[in-house]
Image 1 (tube, helix red, strand yellow):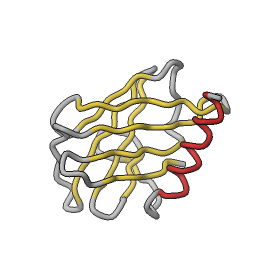
Image 2 (cartoon, one colour):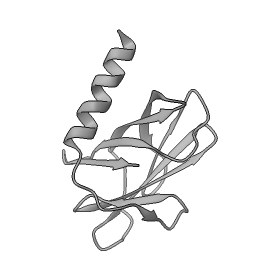
Image 3 (cartoon, one colour):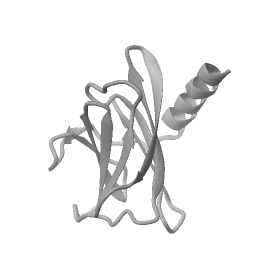
Image 4 (spheres, one colour):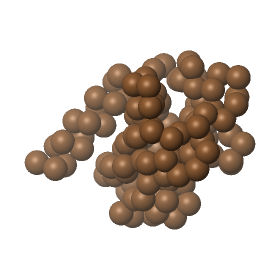
Length: 121
């Protein structure tokens, strides 16, 4: 049942993600995507995932009050990572297994109720 829910959530997030532009290297070295009002950068380091958020003008966005979830594919299986504020414009979470290049979807809720969604390929 857990696997089914993880796949269903991954499919939902992926299908509802904003049409993001191709990813490019962000200022922290990870792939960065444009989601319209925001730029999201995902940096994997071992089991830690850091997600940095910048606005359309490329300025850091404070993440206090934000929350999120990333569902990345690791060794062919979905890995759900809960994201919480961890610095000025950063959300962070821990994976059960080491992450390689970020591949999957991120969904973030801002403190004012906006939703940020993006897909890393």
